[in-house]
Image (cartoon, rainbow, N blue to C red; front, side, top):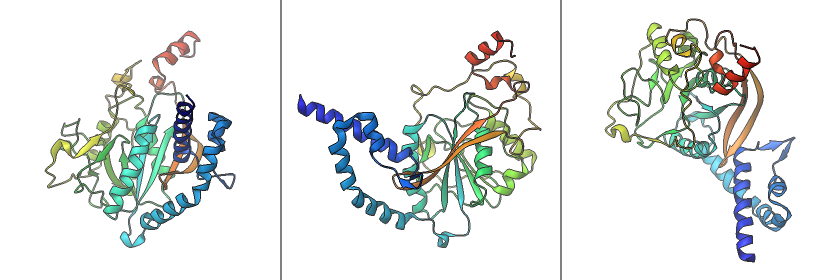
Length: 326
C-alpha cells in the first residue's frame, strides 16, 4: 500500500513538474521557477521528491545549456529568419509534441526560426485568422518572413523545407501532400510568406469565427494581389508526407454556422485584415519547452456584435438574445 502511494505521488509530481517547466515563464519576478508550485498542488509529502529534483537541477541545466549551444540562432545559417505563428487554444498535448519536433527538424536544415504561440484567452469562438494577424504584428521586430502553422501538423519527410519565399507565398502543406485536404485552392496547414507579401494583401480577414474557410478567403486575396503560390516539388511520399496529430474526439471542430454567418463569409472581405484587428495583449511571456525558447502571447480578441455576432458561441448567443443585447 505504501509503495502504491509513493508511486502515485511520484507520478503526480512528475506530471505537474513537466507541465510547469513546459508552460511557466523561465523567470518570474527575476527569479527562476521552482518546484514549490507543484508542492502546493500535490501536498507536503512530495518534499523529498522535489528536493531530489533540485539536487539534479545543476546537471539538468548543463544539459539544457549544451543543447542551447547547438541550437541557438546562428546568423551563419543565412540572413533570413522565420517567425512560426501558431494560433492556439487548449492544445497543450499537441504543443508539447510540436515545438521540440519542429525545432529539431528546422535546425537540421539550418533554418533560423522563432516560435510564437498566439493563445486566444477570451470567451469568443476561435478565430485563427485574427490570431495569425496578431502574431504577424507582435513578431515583426526580429523575423523577415512568417510561417502560418497549425499546431497539429508536422512534416515527416526530411525533404520538406521552409525556405524564404522570395518569389511568392510557399504552401508547404500542398493539396497533393496534406493528409486530409486535397482540393486545388487549399492553402491551409502550413503557408510561408514574406512580410511584404502579407502586408500587401492586408493579412487575413477577421470575420471568420469558428472553424474553417479563412484559408479559402486568403487564397482569393493572394490571387487578386497577383501573388504566385509555390509548392514543394519532387516529393514522392504523397499523403504520408505529414503527420496530423489532432484528436477530433477530444477536440471536435467548431463548425456551427449561426446568424447570417454562412452568407456573410461567402463574400470576399474587402474591409478587415491585419490593419484592423482589435485585441488586447493580456500577457507576453518567454517559456521553455524542453529547453527551447517559445514566445507565448495571451490575447483577448474584440468582437463587434453589429458586424460579426457569430463570434459568440451558440450558448452565449442565446443568453445575449434573452437579455436583449442582440
